[in-house]
Image 1: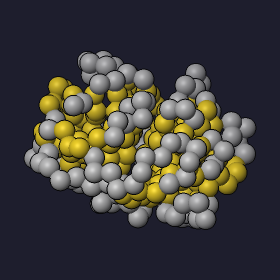
Image 2: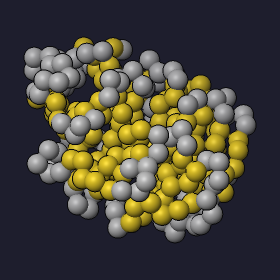
Image 3: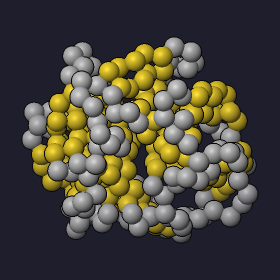
Image 4: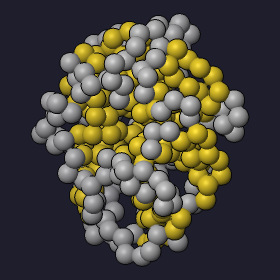
Length: 268
């Protein structure tokens, strides 16, 4: 059931700074399952790669890449083992994986895993441009801009955003970071914050559909909050779900359930 957005702030366009708060007040709907796959080895994270889904195994020795129908699987070995793998991301040229203190990068053509950013606790990761990333540092509370040549620059600090976490890229050169205090902070490619939205609850997972829609959830829970076209939709993944990660594909959303199952749902 679609839930109308209670707007507690005047609408602001990107380029005008503003703050706001959102809340919901109607029952949720259950998402329709369209596919499900049990993994032979448990996993820690997933990400989208176009219409394909990439999975980081908890073994820290390989990635799995599934096609759109989950019928074909490609194994991508990591040339060094991650002792405690935490997450991954992908862009046109590279895979990115990280543990509790190092971010690694691997060219898709060469598949050699190399250290890219050390002494960092990655709390969020998003593509700035091919081969370049924005990285939320959970230890220092800043967002780094990591260039294709390996240079690290401070992009956002505590004066702009407090407690930066997961990041997503939005249309028109915009980005959004989900903070530990339950705020959505929107900023542009110059690192200028243009809008903040205070959520009623705190979330620790966020994804986007490429057209500006945001999908928020909490690890270990079953609910999904969709913010799209000035509306809120609250949905449920079902009762037997303990969410670990999510990724939005074309018209679908994939989740990692309990570390050992991929479930694909149709987006409302």
